[in-house]
Structures are given as C-alpha cells and as structure tokens.
View 1 (cartoon, rainbow, N blue to C red):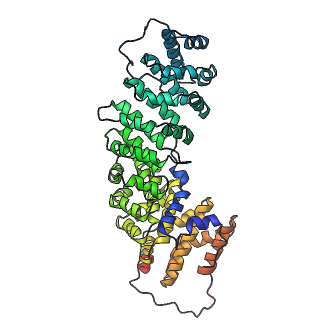
View 2: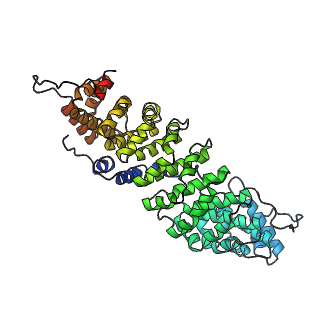
View 3: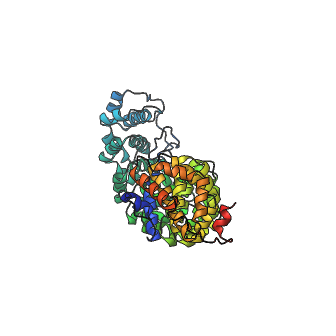
Length: 511
C-alpha cells in the first residue's frame, strides 16, 4: 500500500508491525491512560468522619454535663485556654462542627487559627480523649480541598500523627491512621512527606489478625493512598515495604479490605515492567484472577484493572497472567452487564492481543472472538472503541491463519458499521484494519471474495463517502483503499487465479 501522510501520533499508536510486542503493549497502555485513571467515585481519595464509630478512648469519660454547643468565638477561646477540660470541650465542639454532613465550616476553623492548637493536643499523651478529638478534627479538615489539607500539613500535624500510631489507645491510633490516609490521598507531595517521615513501618506493625475489622479497613485504605499517584511514583523502598502486607491483606475475606488492597496493587502496576514485576513476584496473580469471578463490583473492578495492568508488561508477565487462568474468566467479563467492566475487560484483552502470535492463539483457543464481536455490535460506544483497539492489536500481530479466523468470526460487519462514527482515531484504525486484511487476502488470491463481502456489508459505499471526510488522513486512506482494492481493472482480459475450494476465506465468504 502506498505510504500515507498519516499523523505521527497515529503511526506511533497503531503501526506496531515490526516492533517488539512489549513496546506495542506499552504504547497501547499510554493510549488507554484515561481508561485506567481511578475515578473518585471508585475509591475515595479522602473521607470525613461524620459520626463517631469508635468507642470512647478511655474508660474515664469526660463530664457529659458540660454543654458542647459553642459558638466559634467560644471555641477559639476554649481551645486556647490552659484548662484541659475547657480545651477538650472546645475541641469536641469544633470537631462536631467539622463533622456536619453538609457544609462543614472547614475554612472558618482554619481561618480562626485552630490548627496549631489541635496539633499541640495530639501530643497530650495524658489526655487521650483530647488527642482523639483533635485527631478527628484534623482528619476532617484534611478531607477538604488541597489548600485545606496543606494547612494541616503546614501546621505540623504529620509527625505527631505518626507518633500516635504507637499510641496504646486503639481508638486514638485508628483516628491517626485515618488522618494520615486523608493527607496521603491529596497527592504525591504529601504522600512522600508521610513516607519520608517513616510512617510505613509503624502502619505495617499495626496489621494483625486480631485487629478490629474497622481498624484494619482504615489501615488498608491508608496504605492504598500511599501507593496512589505516579508523578512521581512512590519510591521503591516504600513499595517493597508495603508489598508483603498487601499480599497478606489480599487473602482477607472482607470485601472492603480486598477492594482497597486491589486498588493499591492497581496503582503499583500502573507503570514500568519493573514495577509490574515487583507485584507479580509476590505471587498475587492466582488470587487476583480468583477475584475476577467476584460478584461484588467493588472487588471486581480493581482486580480486573490490576490484571489488565499486568498484561501491559513483558510477554513473560502476560503469560504468567494467562497461566493463572485470566483467559478462562475474560469471556464472561466481556459479557458483564456493567459497561464499565466490559470496557476494562476489552482493554485487558487488547493488551494480550498486542503480544506475540502464541498469545493471540490462546485468545482464539479460549473462544474470545465471539464476545469481542458481540461488543463491537452491541456495546456502548466507549466499549466499542476498546473492542476496536483489541481487533487492531490482534490484526497487527496475527499469523495469516489467525487473521482468517478473525474474519471468520464476523468482525467485518460491525467494523464497517462503525465507519460512520465521529471519532477520527477509531475510523482511521478501522480503515487500517480493513486495508491490511485486504492486502493479506490479495496474497492469498482471495481479494475478490473479500471485496464482495465488504460490498455486501455496505462497506464500499461507506469507504467512498469517507473520501470526502473533513479529516485529510481519513480522506486519503479511504481514497487509497478504493483505488487499490475496488477500482476498475485496467485490463479486462486478466484471468483470475483458480480458487482453492478448501480455502478458509472461500468457506467463509460463501456462507
């Protein structure tokens, strides 16, 4: 086919032939960056403690006869008093304000200058009730905007909170974990401050089989936030510290703990092959694949994303995921009732298809083509886009026999229909796929049959119409396909080669 003046980006993202499979996968991973970004509604970056889920920090309860409904001025005055009882009363009143379900006055509390005193109260080891209320108040302030979280950090809260991880009082310790989770969830800057302050060993030391389930959930969620973000990624030392405990938590039976552990692993595998290797070497793949059968969406989504990330790695890493059984579960995930799962599954499939031909053969062996074609026909458009990428990757890495099986699966009909969509990139990819299949059919002396099929599907009319597309590359590629494969023969006396009656192409085209 004549060289097209295609944009460099399209060539980089689609023209994989001749490139190492792992390079193709990494390019495919970059294209799907938006897909794999964890949305806030999938896993909370920050959480406010609205109601007290913990028991009283000490058996010695504060005087409940004291009124705690104070004005902001009274809170400021009380927090700055030297009497611990008044400090507690004012801090508790501030915490209650900050725990309001709607419109908590985070900004007003910060502007009133309460953060330095709240931080001081974290150090009041003789008054665990006060420590608890101060930690709770700071947790909720840190759940706000980045600016509000920064006020907590710049107020000096991180080191005292880390020290509270060694508190003999479980409820004080748990609230400190929660506060640190909110700070870490703000972004890589604060995450790295927490890591460099040596918080991870203290957090990991808390994990035990006897820990209350709510506490273990908070620790797991905080660890996941310490794994989150990749500009930059968490340092290798921190990752290697956390991975053994994450591997342990992955075996837990509580769905919230398993979900947050999977999210943590998804962040850690969202990167280089070396980072993927750190996770895979922990032996977590069999459990991750087992979780792909989960009926709970909060577990299925991050486990599928993690496995999808792993198959963006080397051929060996991809084969490990295949050996762990991922392909046996992928067809049912492609047919999942939730489009978000279909999309993730199609993305994972596309990364396996970006590998060598023996990986493509395994996709065929696990009967992956029928559900893939079904998604092309009936999926949401975002799902169809992922399915198109899967077909493109399959096409560029397949042997001739595998390509014949792809055509035999009925893939051309939905591809032709998708030529009318408004997405320029997808139309270009489909035209590339059709062009390549036509080239192969020509080498097999089957082009006439394939052209007839494309015509029956309305493909010629659609490709001809694309010659006038406003996008120059689409117009040029459509023109090239029409001229090269559907133009009038210059020599009417050309004798077509005799077709082999056993040809797979013929068998398919004559159905």
